[in-house]
Image (cartoon, rainbow, N blue to C red; front, side, top):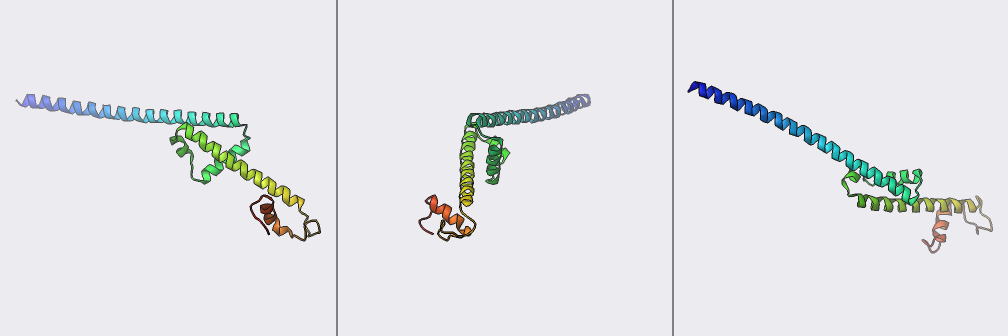
Amino acid sequence: MKIFEADLEKRYNEYLLKAKKLEERDAQRDKEYAAMQYEQKETALLSTMDKFVESNSITSKDFENTLNAMDADGLQYETLLALPLSAVSKLLSSYTTKETSKQKELAERARISKEIPMTPTEKTDGVAPDRVDDIFMYMSGQKRDF
């Protein structure tokens, strides 16, 4: 009877060892699978970004500004990876539009500030240069009077 119990215990220990090895192998496979999925998502995201840049003829500087704006709003790279690709395209489009609008507004402000002389003259009706923002807002219709 003791021989039978010893044999049974030996088989049980072998079974536990095999089970542990299988669990370790499964855990390793899960890690490899997760890494592969991450790599596939990353490749798809980068491909989507490339297609977006190409299809919209965006300069690298504008795209960098778009990514910086997204980052400033808390949309990190990991967050983008978790989103569906269609949502990423929409986000890129909306942020690019916002950044383009900002750049156009800044360019318009720079153009207007160049047109206004640095000293008050009759041409500007005595408006001092520190009122450039007011003038810009008035010219763009955001302000009625100044």
